[in-house]
Length: 385
Image 1 (cartoon, rainbow, N blue to C red):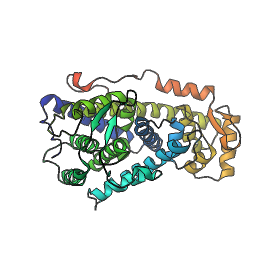
Image 2 (image 1 turned 120 degrees about the vertical axis):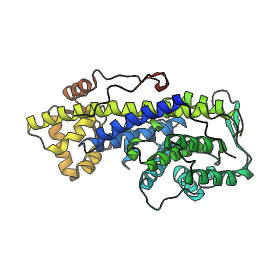
Image 3 (image 1 turned 120 degrees about the horizontal axis):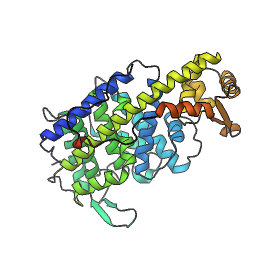
Image 4 (image 1 turned 180 degrees about the vertical axis):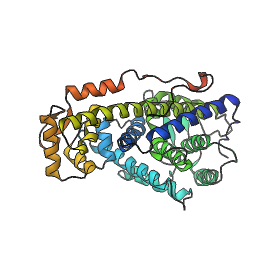
């Protein structure tokens, strides 16, 4: 027996409608835009960063981007870096599966994703169900807050979860199915370690397969990472301390719907900023007679990211020498500043470019409303020009 989908009431239906509305606007806003690839790359990195931060693997957005790009980190090392790289492998595979016409869920797939995530530590039994009991403890107090079902039940419960995903209830919205898959996996706790990351990755896979939105923009992992305590609290509330699938999952479903609304709204805000900054940088590049290929790296720097030769040359598809020449030219033009030496060499926005980034973000809201407190339809979702 798994947790049952709670009957969706009128208020929840209204919130699902609001989420669909924001997602449609976001889908239009990111379609065929020159900057969509930059936004998708940054979103993917934030998902890796957010999901791993929940487990205590904290890195900068620059190192999360390095993991996403399969490059060497600037600061991260050891187990933290291994965890990031493992999660990038798993999440990349999730995105690959999003449009596979021969796809089906299986226990083997879930175990394979788990192996990708924790293969760096064989004490965590990567790709295998846990061999015995498992307990979740409060990191600060050491208090036992959850006990998973007996290990002997795990294989059968995971079979039931796979059947649920391959044959979801008729009429169940993909957002709700995805939320329930996350909840059930985390509550079954089938692995010795990495259950939270697996639950979040599975939820992202269900969302990516739904086709509601581009797979790069459907995850809520960034939001969960930024709201770690609220995430833990609602799981504790629904779980009730031990495996009790007859408990009410409504608080969890509502939490996930709120996360989807706020994450999609955040991405819409970033899309508006990205378009304004891209246009401003493009104008400046044309004014200075610089090659068009430098626009993307300047936009990223204008958003506060560090630029590196290796990342730039791969993105612009140029040689190392040409990349070095371009970056020197951007420094000479007063758009970038060089920092560090040798392998630590990187570039940040100079004052004028940083001002363009700040101007592009001016006036954008910094907080998102609770979708359950809104009335009527949403305002401010007109497509970008």
